[in-house]
Each structure stands twice: as C-alpha cells, then as structure tokens.
Length: 172
Image (tube, rainbow, N blue to C red; front, side, top):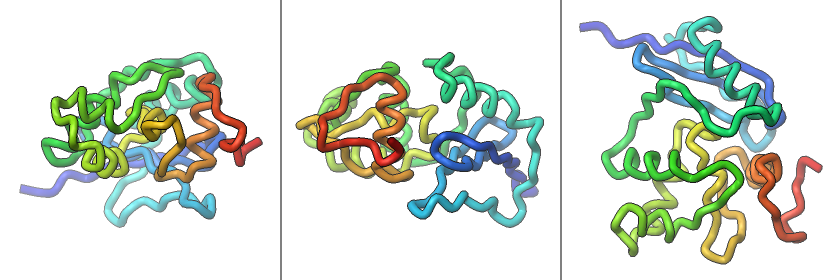
C-alpha cells in the first residue's frame, strides 16, 4: 500500500500568504505565516495542485472580502479523539461571536478540561475555517493564536467583534 500524496496551494490573504493542504478526503490544513510573516513551506512529497484547492481558495477569498460567514468545504483534519471533538465544537462557534476555553470544555461535557481544550485548540490544523480565533480567555482577553495575536485581532475585528482598547490591532 502506498502513502497518500497530499496536495497544496498557496494564496494571499490579509494575514499573509496561506498554505492550503488537502488529501483525497478533503482539506487537511491551513497554515498561516509564522510570526515573521514568512509563509509556511510545503513538505517534501506534497504535490502542488491549485485546481484541487480552488474551492477552498474561493471560499477563503469570500470570507476575507466579507461576503462569506460559513464555510462549506470537505474537511479532513487529523488528531486524537479529544482534539477532533474540540474541532467539532469550534465549528459551532458562529461568525462574529467568541467563546471561552471554559465554555468549550463545558460543551464537551468536561468542565474541568479548559487547559486541555486550549492545547487542542492550539493544534487546530484548519485555522479560520474552524475558527479557533473566536476562542478567548474567560475574562474576554485574547490568548495565544498560531498566527500571532495580531492575526487573531484582525480576524475578530473583521467579524465585527468589539475588542478592548488595550487589544488594539497590530494590523491597523
């Protein structure tokens, strides 16, 4: 049996160049630029396929243009059973709203697992589409984000979420 070959494409975004990765079963990853705004690099063996990722690119472009609030893509994230349960809860957080790690833990039926939820949230392979940027601290403060807090601020403001003055966007 041969290993599945993953496909990739890149796209510009207000957050920098995104790397989209898919398998035959759907979108696997959306990789944000690093903290220096350097784009993620495809792994050896991945095959560039802009056509296979065209629907994901179009829907992300619509989101960034403000015309899409819900994604309709075949998703195929990988992770533990708990991580996948956290991703399912992320998918339920509506556009323009936030949720705390504690609230997510309660939704999972594990009210004391907010740290584990945070760790699983930090491993979200499908940033933006599975909106981990909508998860905040219990006091409403912004907490970590793979693309940096400036990217998280930008995404929340883009969705119309009011942020406190001390959380002013690094992106303007």
